[in-house]
Structures are given as structure tokens and as C-alpha cells.
Image (cartoon, rainbow, N blue to C red; front, top):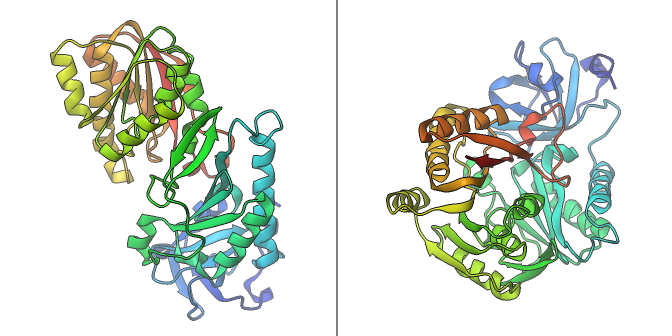
Length: 411
């Protein structure tokens, strides 16, 4: 529906939870597709309402813009869920949104040919599925639902019930986003089923394990599933250095693709122990060693000792957390990429990634150009990588495109 057509006069709407009027000119992001109404954009409300109440959002002139869920005293005050003025935000609506999201993933990932190869993937991706602030990942018979705001608290029983029904899963674990616990006072425990200490699942035909209650994100980096296969295609006969390797999924794929030898680096001893366990579960015969290390420091030592590698994988944690931190973060990316470029043999392959949503692909390429110039090496991009289909990107909300990667040959 065209946005101008969708707007209606404020007086035509009975109160639904709470009405929110925006300051002059603060409706522009919403009209462009954003689902976020920040508290600083609000001029006034018609009263008070608890977290999770339905909120109708109007511009300064009283034109209706959208409907979503309200969180008082939060930086993100409203999460828009619909632009249809006739659509009520209620249980039936949320259940339908979940069914559509799960059906898409079933078509993308759970095809008859691939179902036994991959049993872990994303079911809900927040704004991309019209459910801002909700992430849900499937691990075999378990679903991990990560909640990013208090607006969803009253709705969690409905969400969990429909996820199990739509996906055919037996268990749902509710997990608060740590930032939401700090930012909005979201409870540290949201209920749900208690997971086993370790859960086994399949990805690309390999067996992995994760402690759902303690792992990064929802337990594993599911967004790199396709990229692990793509990078492994360059591993045959090559020595491989995997920096920020976490629990070793890139290295498992590289080993089975025919890598000559592998070294994984990470600062977490627990993650490295799990990486070694994954090689036990997926034996390849390829020598694989792991070192607990600060990656930049270890790469500098490798440079000073004139170590060389044929394929280097860089998959660091998020280095840019805000717009203000962009340039500082890009310098951090540049430093580690510069070291990697210097360590590669002529004709070697660099697979470098950023999971920072504030870093666009243009920024990432610019950073790599700096690194190549300072290293005195010619770097050519041969593949551009991103998120898999179960992490879709709305064209009107590019903030959902956070993962980007470049595969390069270094001369």
C-alpha cells in the first residue's frame, strides 16, 4: 500500500493502547521504511501504557503512520509492526507473521535434498520478518528465541507457542539480548524450556555442538553457513590460518576441502576446546592446531618471525558499535587486515569479514584498500560475500545488512 494512501486522520482511530505524536520532521525515517521510533523523536503521547502495549504513531499533523509495540522509558520507544491502518496488532497477526517466516526458511533450507545436511538455521530475523526485536534460530529440535526489547514480554507465550507449532520443534528457549538487559532492564531470565548442556546439530553435512545457554549470539554463528563453504573452496593444498576462529567451523570445512594444515587463533580457551572437539566429531586427517592468543599481537609475531600462509580467514567480532565509532573501528579492521596481507604468500587468498552493521561494503572496501597500499601488495577481489537467505535484507531497511565479506587474491 502506498504510504500516502495508508495515512489516515488521527480522529478516525479509537485509542489502541497509546497514541504517539512525532516532532516535526521526525517521520522521515519511518516513511522510508524504518521500524524504529526513538524516544527523542516523540513530541507527546495521550497517556501512559505498559511495555508491550499497542502504539499508534502519528506525524505532527495527525496523519497515521504505523502501528507497533510500545516500550516506555526506552531509547527505542516503538517498534513498528504494520503500515496497514486496518491491521490490528493481536495474537492472530503475530502467529501469521511467524508462519510466513518459518515457511520461507523451510523453502530455503529444509528442502528434501538438504534437510539432513543442515539442521540449524534462522527462523525469525527481526525487522526482515516484520517482528522488530525478535530473533529465532533453530538447532535440531530446539528453537532459541532471542528478545531485544521489553515490548515483547507480554507476547512471549504466544510467540513461543507458534514457533513450536509452525516449525514442528519440541522446545523453545527464551534468551534475552544482553544489550537489552542493560539498555531496557529486560529480565535476565525469560522462562522457556531449559536446554541440555550441549546440543548436537548438522551444518553443511558436518556435526557441531553448542551450549545454547552460553554460546555467542544464540549459540553459533549460523550467518556464516554459506560463506564457510565458499571459503573452503580455496583451501585445497593450502596452509590455512583462521583468526578469531571461535569454535572452528571455518576450519572444519577447510580441512574436508583438502587443506594442507590449519592454525586457529582465538582469545577464548573454551571456544578453542570446542574447536578441537569439532575436529574429533568430523575427522579429516588434516593437521589442525589451535592457539589461545590476542589476534593482532599474534599476527605481529608471525610477521616478525616471517611466517607465511596460503589462505587467511579473518572473522573478527563486531569492531564498530555506533556511528561515532566508525573511523576508529575501520582503523582496527585495517590493522589486522594489513598484517594478514603481509603474511600471505604470493597468490595467496584472504577471506575477510565484518559483522558490524555500521560498516557498509563501501567502507569495508576502502579499509582494505588502505591495508593493501600500506602493505605494498596488489589485492584483487574475486568474491563478495554476505548473509545467507535465511537472514534476508529488506530493501527499505538496509540496517539489516550487517555481514559482509571479501575473498581476495594477494599478489
